[in-house]
Figure 1: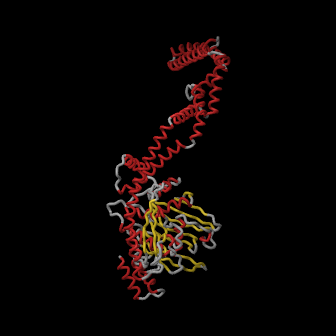
Figure 2: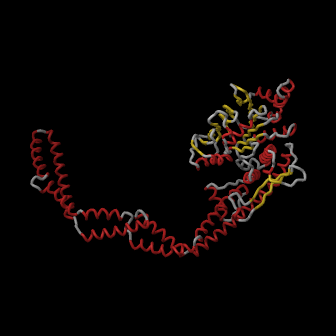
Figure 3: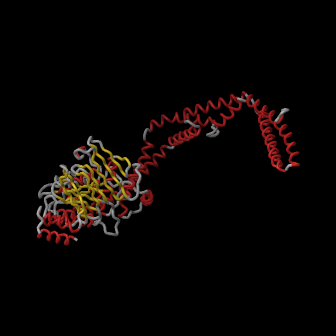
Length: 590
């Protein structure tokens, strides 16, 4: 749900804030006051193309922002794009400079217009006069039919659901109709993965065979080296350092032994002499007992160190043969690392990889046969569940088109309406949502052929058709026991009342009210019959201040609503009769 919409230095708006609520939010005001400008501002936040024309004259930049309640789908999109999710709200902000450059922020973090467009279907669907944003494309038409049918389709099943559905698919068990859309998604991914596995085995077969000789040589070279472990080179380097410096090490060790123990002035001799003197002192002065003990410990430590360095010196083996052997081995290992990896671990892993590739070549015929069988099974499974989904869509399309046609004709239009479901069973048309091409067709005049819905010329007609379709889905779709399929939480209709009045206008207002019972609706209207149905009513007004035109927006209190509706009924001069009529309209719409 859209909680707040804010615009600064946008077109004729200096600064405007609208705090919206659930249900039906209506925008009214004099012609030219800027009602549609706010819808355009929201469209900009949904990813519409921006130009410098939207910047208020004299300002450096225009800023539009809004706050939406978050959804699970929106949070997933933000996480995929590395944007932190903060609390239960999503803050969108877009800046457009007078030079034409722009910036996008989501939750106060830099983002792109592309992310806004990804978020748009999760947050709002804008039916602006130009209808350039949120066009009712084939995917949205299919989604509306699926909602009506109670079918849950998705591009990718959740991991847990996917596993359960796959197990049933592989066991060739029937799926419940509610699960049919999820079954198609799971079957599609099962088929695509099996195709990718087969393609991986079949692609570049000749190249793989040419590589077999090279892989065989590489495997043999690594195996012949008989690497002792991934730290063998480090161990050999340590031993090499000892052998290369054997004479220095022997001299240093023996000199240390002399200084500590062997020499005439060795440390142990001096410590022994000092020990005798301290023992004598301790006999008469108790405070030297602890010092004598510490000196005894020092003597023991010196003896241990002396013994260690003496043993080390005696075991030094200055073997030129062993040194040469180590150097040759290190040269071999370095050569392998230059060819197959930076470390011995990478060399070992590479050897395992080429061994696996050779095994695949040797067993390729068996593996390809098994992969082809898996593909054939996956194709059969997908065909079955996709056909079931097609039949579900066709049967519900007949119901939807009858209801929608009646709803459209209630809105001052005389049309013929059809929902066409055309299965495209060739594999290039297979998707995670089935193989059906769903398209709404309409004839707005008697005797004319059916045409795609998007070819309707009038933006007002398009908005009314969209309203009728969505009301049909909400009222005629699956019952409360069925799962509801999420649609955009905010629907925006601009100039939906063009060319209608009287009872048709009242019917539009009632349908908007009905639709708003399930999701938030924002509507710009000129008709009092529609304005009377609003849950929240905002007045857009234009005034001149300090030589500049400014647009203001404010929410009307209940007593002010009657005054505004009376103005819409009678024009600039509000009469007592129009005021009473407005009060009656408000009372009747509750």
